[in-house]
Length: 484
Image (cartoon, rainbow, N blue to C red; front, side, top):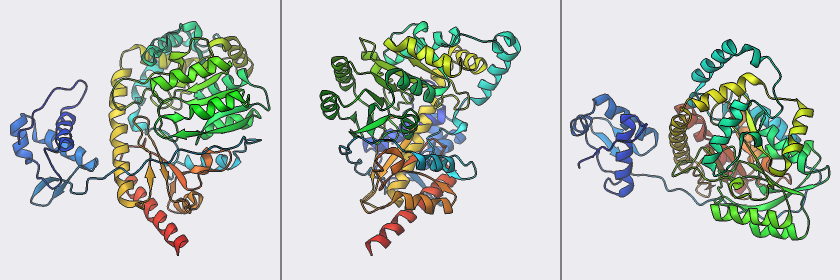
């Protein structure tokens, strides 16, 4: 077998070697059980160092594609995993009043305990983030622009950052000016301000089901009701059910995660996004769009935002750099369309402005040209991590387990048999120092008791592998007891 190496922009040499071998496995040239070229032979064929070949083989081992046999070399694994069925589309639920997420409050605290193996909280590993560069930029900004850093700025935010955000939004298909961008304290504040601008207490909001529990926390704080709509793990919310709700005048607004949703990982296609905007325009209903994960696509180009199809200003676009650069800087933004003035006034009344130093730090990072390179590296790492987690779940969880197949982001949604209780697993896992996110957190009506969300944002390691194995054992143990 001759392996040909092709240059790939921004990839390390060992990653290029691994990519080619991975392609040969996917194409069937290398079949399960086949022996790979020896390290020395591949070193000679490709004119790369032995350490480069070893690093490539280690990467493929981590991804579960190959294995080493003592005194024999490397082989394609015979038990290449088959991804299980996707979770079922959710069913229709009646409106809930009021939204109560008190349980999620306590679970969230446990998920963020740094002393536990955190498989619940949807956060990227700090190892994947450009912390050193951000620290250096912030130090330079504080020293060189101290007067600006310690002064009041406009409520809508620093012009330098709004300019960079407007440029980045072109990647999402949006044409906006810097003056249309409002800087916020993360996506959460952007969503909260947007919902306050378009609703009054007692209104009902259409949401995906399951939905991000942060949405539910905001709805509860604003005394809003929720209408859960059926949602498919591949392409998102059911437009048929949404249109029925619009015809019955049941809802005042919608709130959706458009790309690689949390927790399902679904991503609407362009046609569906365009149809959704058409419905909103027809009924004059605002949509609060959370596009937090849009930059974390694994293949092809960045998916468009729903805002890209907005011709009448009914879409309030919200995003941030919390999942790609730094959760702690708390820098987000909102493009509020026809509600621009209302959101700016609400921002002024809430906290007047977002801290200047983090704004200028993010603006400098976006302006220096390194963001795209960073995203490419991060996407590759996240895709590899989800692949490793998926394979391990297939190996150690019950065969009836259904699993989402996200093409971006870093969360997985698991659906177990109906008799399974994810809260029991949550409590058992805590005893093993592991935190997870049980499914009932993602539904105001307490559905998805047999589901859970796992975070794949942490770099794959033996520690994570062992934690997934423990969860699989606990799951099988619980099901066996219930079935007896």
